Image (cartoon, rainbow, N blue to C red; front, side):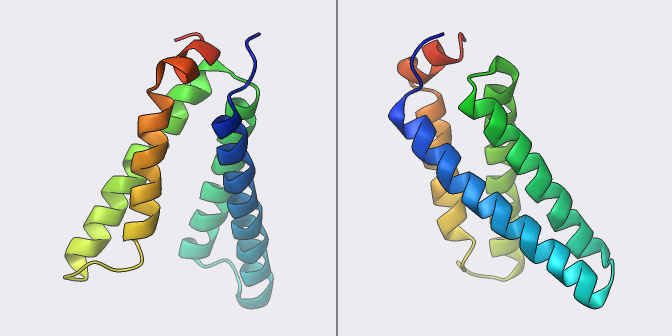
Length: 116
């Protein structure tokens, strides 16, 4: 297997931290207030995020596609939220990060790592 690119390592570590914090926060809210559908949804998204991070970390080809799909969906959701709230809000930062991740996933070095 090719050596993992440094930025994949950095992306995986940062997103794993976000996923773990989201999962812990969601579980804490479920324990504290009950199983609200929004909270359960965020816990599910956090679990999916951690699964995708595992696949990206290990260079599994299908997770390259899933990482790309999840980043695109996140951009769409951020754009929808900004349109609904009639202005740029805190969702712009994750959207910009997702654009950077998509551009990086498309680089030849990363595509070679994932054998794409």
